[in-house]
Amino acid sequence: MEDKLKFLLVNPTAPQWQVKPGRKPRRSTKTFRFSMLPSLHVAASMPPDVETRIIDEDIEPIDFDSDADIIGISFMTFNAPRAYEIADKFRNEKGKTVIFGGFHPTFMPDEAAPHADAICIGEAEPNVPRIIEDYRAGKLQKTYYNGLADVSNLPILNRDLIDKSQYITPWALQATRGCPHRCTFCSVSTFHQHNHRTRPIEAVLEELRCMGKHVLFMDDNLVGEHEYAKELFSRMIPLKKTWFGQGGINIAYDDELRQLAAASGCHGMFIGFESLSEDNLRDSHKRFNKSSEYKQVVKILHDSGIGVFAGFVFGMDNDRPDVFKTTLEFLHESGIDLLQATIQTPFPGTELFEQMDKEGRIFCKDWSRYDFTQVVFEPNHMSRHTLKHGCDWVRSNFYSHPAIWRRVKRAFGYLSPFLSFACIGVMNYNYRTRCTVNHIMESGKHFRV
Ligand code: SF4
Image 1 (cartoon, rainbow, N blue to C red):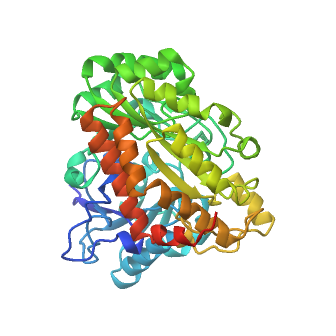
Image 2 (spheres, rainbow, N blue to C red; image 1 turned 90 degrees about the vertical axis):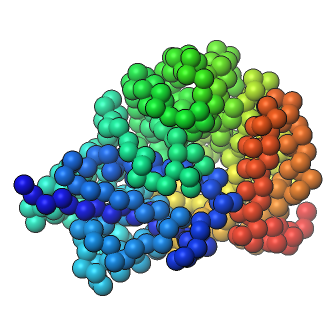
Image 3 (tube, helix red, strand yellow; image 1 turned 180 degrees about the vertical axis):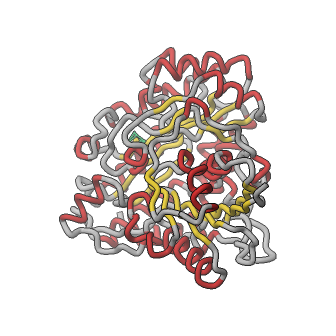
């Protein structure tokens, strides 16, 4: 019988979030840690004779003296420089075999190649057994092109591979993968080849039955297919879960879908509103969002007992310096519960990146700056300085103490007191802490309305 192979899966992070040796992870950033679902899926795809360990650099330092045979590193764009640093150290100083996977190496394989022994393009799971076989045979290939994973029969995840206490909830799952839309700034859709795949509902229910009460759907667009979502939600009702998810604005327009979501325990949805400008929505292929209806959308969701976590992007080509004031007024008036305000970022793999790169507008390719808080391209109708400080001004005002308490008080009208405090209150304050650590509260003061 062959020896057990040891596989270490590493999740790199930005320097300000790394846990230093001997220190504990920050409690306030727990809100932003989402249970390592992709790594758990890769681990579950390993053949039985492979022992897998997961290190999340957000919660523990990397053990460079690990006795693992293979180091797998999965990364996005913002943590690519850190991933290369880790890979170089493991390969050059420790003689380890390093394999890359994730969004950034998928879209930038030539850049990633010198730092790794092999690269997985696309979802790694379908090729994991073959990679292990090739490694054992000494025939590891430089590149593995993966088709989309077959989600009809996903293996059961071993959540004991992570420290459950360190994540917002250990009970994260996906019922679907990908998104049917093609927004120009979105790499999710490209990564999944513009495909929206649904798992068998019985398999999702089986997974849910083994989970705790509070569940997080990590789907890119949980309501991408209405009929599927309706059946899932209706069959979830007897499970009595409380859940949060991410989906399109369409959930507000389909009464049956929304009512079933609420009846099955939905208490919050992240929705990418993106912009109040219809021109921006048109240019980014997101015309299905109608900004004139946003306030009504928020009200409808609140009336159903669903909190609204909104994503807004600043610096799109039709934005002018007045966008910050107009959007902040809208955010306050509409009653949005939580905000993810980001500076437009042209990620590799997106149509936006191709277009801006061709136009010579991307002035910075230091990927560590691609964290949604920094300007890396030349804006169309404002200076880089205005874009940076304007976006920070929106965030710092939205997360001011009086504004947070107004939201908590208002949430009592549509959420339970527990959810108003534990979700709206705590998450707002965690966002505020994140803004403080990233110097956003300070930077926002430099913007003049
Ligand atoms: S709807 Fe959302 S997930 Fe789908 S392509 Fe657009 S931004 Fe991406």
